Image (cartoon, rainbow, N blue to C red; front, side, top):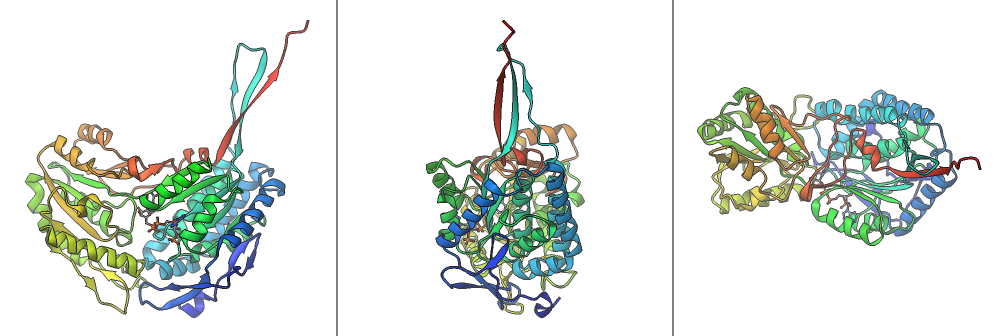
Length: 489
Ligand code: NAP
């Protein structure tokens, strides 16, 4: 699909079920990372726009039909949203690929399909939001109900815009909430597309509002707005810390899906074909811009040199290039900022004595922000390149001598989002999985996800869970009702 076919006129804000201009008149370019060309512009909103959006959301929550609607009717609308996502998949694939630089084949199979599945899964959950009865010694009927929290501020990062918006919005809406969504500055287009799609699916006006603009202005105004009841944040640990502290000041509940730096352990009994496939997928997928990427490879010492040799041969053969080519596996980084950050880390690795096994440089192609997938060995254990989240197609490799050392190295960073291990020993698989500090552990593959599997971090990777029935807990409050039933006198 060409830019003309994609129809990318300048975009507005979506508030109260209608498109509107921002109050400042300022706009921001949206850039195609595969070429550096400007795709369109979006509104650079400010606190006044946030206020209008929150007021619309508040009105929709307090006086609109959404939270009072039978759950079955809400579910029907969310199912319709899933259907529309699939019907309009070609447009969504082209849009998300152009905005983020994602290869079209992955965009279709992963991003668009996952978004549809999120709406389907949450539609089913909507119909099972139940309370409980409790027996007490008081002569009474005591029961609980689960009620929506109200106006949810959903703030999302640049790397999986469609999936991350859908994850929050589908769960929040399923539980009867209303949403003001701020997508990332760099990749806002699918959020605006989805606003209209959800309206077409039957979501009432004001229930979903999308406000584009910078995190420091729009994001911050959302965190502080007294009309916001809950903050659902996904992004870096640094900004998450700020968001959590502002939420703390205002006593707002938060869920925090933050950074990751997962370890991938390859034991000496691993099936090497399976392991290498998973290792490569875990660090090149989405050009390594993947919170649950596996950029830290820990290999049993006996296999260390063999694995490096295989990676040296295999990694450069992974197709990198134009994301519109269906054969492409690695597209560009999502922006120049991300590309420069990766370059700085690889430079640091060289200074720290790291040996570049492959990659280690940009790929000059069409003016896009490409970086070759890079494998680095021989870094010191305390290297910053190992400890910090690089967020690019960079894999560091470290040997270990035994299980204790493997687990200690795996748990040695402040992050705890994901981890994985490769072994044919089922006892070891469960034993090591239990010892890894991570919200999710994969055995003999990587990034196996489903809307039914709870996802979220420990330590500096955040708290709260998305996906699974657990996701709805964050979007509901429990209310207890106790009815006095005295004995007749
Ligand atoms: P980021 O810089 O933290 O931004 C995330 C969101 O916060 C963006 O919408 C950003 O707006 C906004 N923001 C920035 N400053 C803010 C402020 N002062 N107040 C409120 N909001 C503010 O993250 P990113 O670089 O876009 O994304 C990469 C990070 O996200 C990585 O650390 C990655 O691991 C993490 N991530 C985590 C998960 C997970 O599920 N745990 C999933 C995906 C990504 P702007 O775009 O305008 O700056």
